[in-house]
Image (cartoon, helix red, strand yellow):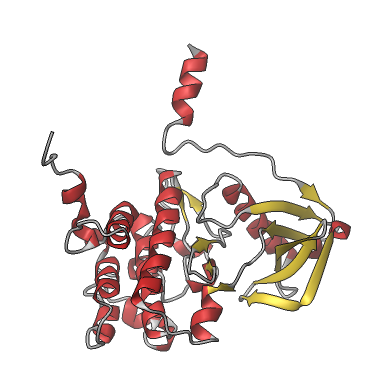
Length: 309
C-alpha cells in the first residue's frame, strides 16, 4: 500500500522531488572575470570552467551583505534543485567556499546571450516568429514552474537566456516562492520593478497572475526594444486598469500575435490567462494548428467536446 501511495504521489503535478547537486570547492573552478555575461543589481553571471568544460558561474556583488548573499543563494538553490525542464537553466554544481564571496551556483554553459543583453545592448530587432519562439519556451517553462507549486516572482529579460535559434531558458530563481495557503507580498524582493504586476507593487500577495503580467512585459520589451521603466513609472503602473503597455504598441504595424499576448497578459489580474492557456495558444501557432483568437480564450478550446469520436 505504501509503495502504491508513493507511486501515485510522484505523478502528482505539484509533487517536488529534489536530487543531490554536486558540491565543489573554489579551486575546482577556473573563473574568467573578464568575461561577464550579465551584470545585475546584485548578481554577476561569468564564464567559467569546471573540469575543463565551460560553465556559467553565478556569484553575488561584493556590495551585498553576507547574510543577504547566503539567503538569496540558498533560496535559489532550494528551488532550482527541484526543477528539471528543457527550458530551465540546468544547475550543475554548488560551490561552497570558506567565505561568502566564494559561494557560487554553477550552471550549464551559455550558448549565446542573456535576452537582456540582446534587446537593450545589441538592440537586436527580432522577427515575430523569433519573439513567439522565445515566448513559447518561456511559457512552457513557467507552466511547469507553476505546476510544481512555485512562483518565479522575478521574471524579466535578465532572467531569460537564448540560443542563436532563439530557444529560450529561464533562470534567476533567488526570489521565487513556494505557493502555499499563506499569501506573501513581493516585499521579499528588495528591488521592485515596473515589469512586475501593478497590484503586487501595491502590496497585494504574489501569485501566478503576477508572473503572467511580467511575461507580458517581457514580450513588450522584445517588441519595442526598450526597458519598461523607460516608459512607465511605478506610480503610473499602480493604477490598476486597462493595459497601458498595449496602448504604446497599438499603432505599431505588424506582429499581431505578439500584440495579442501582450494585451491579454497585461490586463487586470482577473482577466489574465494562465501559462497553460498561453503555452497552448503559442504551441498551436508555432505548429500551425487552429487556435482561438487570443490566449485568454484557450480554456474554451482545451475543454471543448471532441468533434469526432
